[in-house]
Image (cartoon, rainbow, N blue to C red; front, top):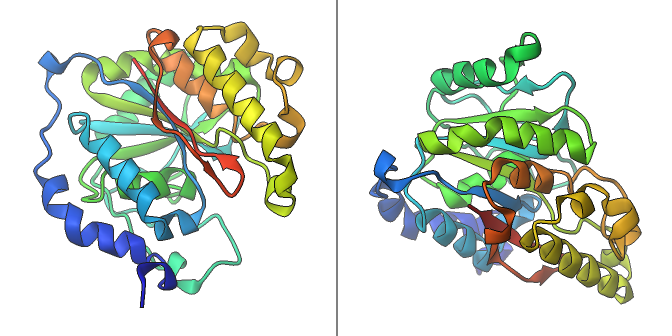
Length: 284
């Protein structure tokens, strides 16, 4: 029986071989300087059946010092005003998906207490009023799926921050407010999908639209063309196929806002899966 025939079998295999390395990963120190801002194409639960994707994510996590904490903004949580997920140790995950094998609803990612991080975020984001914390909302799959592979030891405190809206400018602004956290060894992640098209999965002839959008977005980021990125509906080719809704695109603007220089962007993952681009970016 192959790992692909067992739900989350590739993830089980990753844990078996990668946990010792993950547990001894060198921790961030001030001398390392700011951590990068990341844009992660997170995938659905079956990402945990894809050994190459999991290995790519794990190696990416290992390529940096282990962060003191992680702030993640996922395509799957929009709440205004901005809100925080639960910060208690071992908060159960939020299984915000349906129609999958029952095993995916039993997976755990019991991260440490993140009260200090939540307090820090409340201070950073609460200048215009209180920041609500959902004490019983754990990480959704846009947060926990990639983190299970990047930091499989589950030994880094994590808080998820909601998207205040699907307005690209709002996510850019939110990223800019989180930027200083990177200098404290806190990793800032925007989790979406470089293209998010179910239509292409039904009709592979549409793949070219996604490829065109992927090329455009990558070029716009590396040129630092923030105006084009925020006006993507008018500027990007293939956008109606690649992003019929904005939810999986706008986390890219969060990452751009949290970075110091978008032109430093490099692709940690760069390929198409089921006709969609799973490109993931590091920006310093």
